[in-house]
Image (cartoon, rainbow, N blue to C red; front, side, top):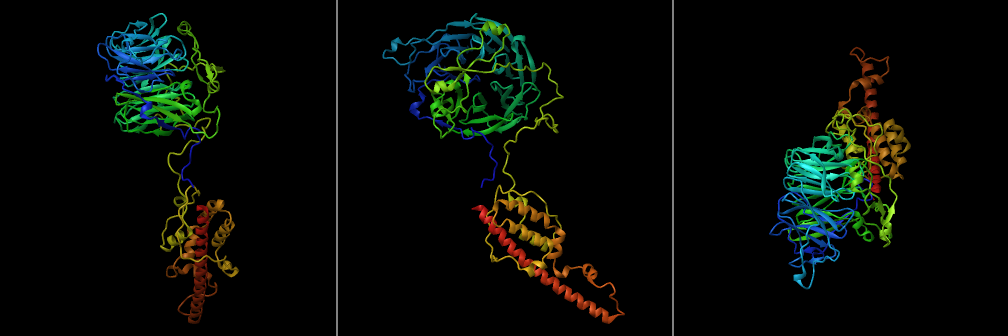
Length: 622
């Protein structure tokens, strides 16, 4: 029988699985630049990789179907005069992407329709030039990120401490957010109206982008190393990863309506030094954390407004960059719920598939809810005009059946924006670090998983034999009246006591009420092992210290007061009445002998009950 309560979740058996070396993307030259980005980005058709190339910056685009060893010379996407630091694919056009470079420019690129990296004639390989360049930053551009709801809207961060929002179609920067320090990560809300940033000044900011000012600005992780943020899809929650002042890796969950502090405080992950790169899957409500410099990927589930740990994919191959595939690109027929691409050794990219094992065949609607398709919710002009909407979703069952993706119905609910100055007097009722004694919530949340194994039966109640031995040693501790549980049953101890029938009527008449009640309780559960814990609790509560102590106390320690109370009141013990004294002593001796016989009978009964307890424990263990 299990000794730990298991939290109910349909994703607790999700596991990660890598592929064979020949199914990876080999002979890749990943950029050695130390700028903190993910190095790779993926969509259902292509993989973009920051490339180590001379004569200016470049990056490569690799079709996902081109597995195995790549040619020594492949067409590169060239156009920057310095190293490429980041790339990002448009969520609504799998052939369109943007790049950020150390030269301070933003490149816009279109993958040709006949694009191929393998050809019989290497002279036919031609590099791809950018469709357009965006200029406006005064220093290097470190991050590019497309708006997830509006078409042709792009956010870029720069070493000039600003974030610019671009109308890609017009080729102009229309909004500028002054962060004031080096930006370490960007993340959009699902409807594209809010933008969250983390920066070197250790602050988390949530921007109302079209107002060009932060709706919230507050302290984030306290460590000096970089932190990352990811918006949890259509939830009004943000997850951040960073470091403590002692350089421990941390995870935090933030409510954008009360963003003064994380909901459950800063959760310590481990002591490794690499940044944790967070990725969110809105369909399964799962958060993936990929450690930079190690080969592990943890994954959590957002349940009951908490990030519950599920499991961890472990690998001895360290990773510098990781990209996750949009949900519409996973293999639904193989029960694949997510796929990652990790860089290994700066010379190949390894796919890692995460599966949710199911015995049933056919489409599994519960693990594949509708997901965002390739159609935007609005144009760039509408977005800059103030419109807010979630992008339409597609029904993955149509993809499973090999049909054209069918649009699914969805509720268009705009996010509730945080107040510019959140009130510190109304924290989340489950926040630990802000309020040491939080007030109870108006509506209690469903129970969550236990952090450790529950107390065992051995820890909660002592056996009858232990109680008897305790009182023989004349200990004065009270017997705790605790609840019983058979979450964990100790292995029964072999005892030489012979199991016999129930006590006779004469023996039963000589028992104390406590012992008789104990025997009746155990007899009642003789054929009902499931009621054993309840009977044990009742027996422990009835066997009070005073009753068992009076029965099991050695004869030499018996005080004369109880015996004197049993003498006839007309007789007194004095030196002037010798005959009466002798008669009283004879009566006392008779009473003591009777008490000894009663105690011997009760000790024999206790031994029999102990054997019965061991027998019941053996039946429960089976």
